[in-house]
Image (cartoon, rainbow, N blue to C red; front, top):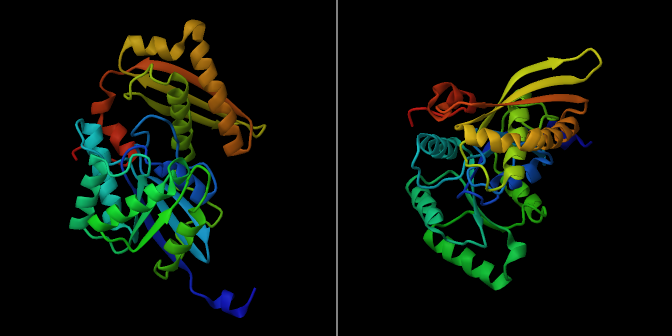
Length: 305
């Protein structure tokens, strides 16, 4: 290591990743930090809680904030998630707008651009995602049309799923971060507690395995976490649904569905925690969980947004 590298001041800052639902924000954050910190499913608004992914790059600690998708909210939970996304954008050193290049300038994206124009961030980057799925000439046209609406400091063409272009974004965001001490252990990928991350991984499996059979209104809570003497961990979780009919769907015939969900979640948790996991899942009906202030506090959301 050179003397310059030793004496170089450390840099640290926050990058808010914003965009419409299913733009690929969580996939991008996972790719940027090099590990699973945010769940990814086909359902819109999968991300509820604020998720911070931590990347070390070019001497800087880059803290990516994976925000909920921004859209026209209708329910209390929707309003809380959208408010959280804008709050993170206002506080960030860099705002990275991710647009699904296949969908282009949708109504939701146009609304986001208008809001960003009102609250011009310190540094504003644009990333057109899923570029491997559309012709290059359409990408260039989309970039030009978007930049005509709102001028960006940098524009990137990426495929978050393939990892293409992610390093270029990391180079750019890390360059201008303010000098200051690192806020997290450099080996840490996220600030999310293991109990919450474990619940999110199980919720991801519920969505992935049930596809269109179950509505969005479902949540998972880690009720108990016990470190065993043999180095394994025992985790007890409850899947909360709103109606008895939904409970039957999650359980499946003879409990087959919940067993499959548990097996898939257990495998991923063992890879994440690097130890044997004993996962026990229960399904309960809680019809008013969407109106429970405690749930919002757990997710870092404002119940009264």
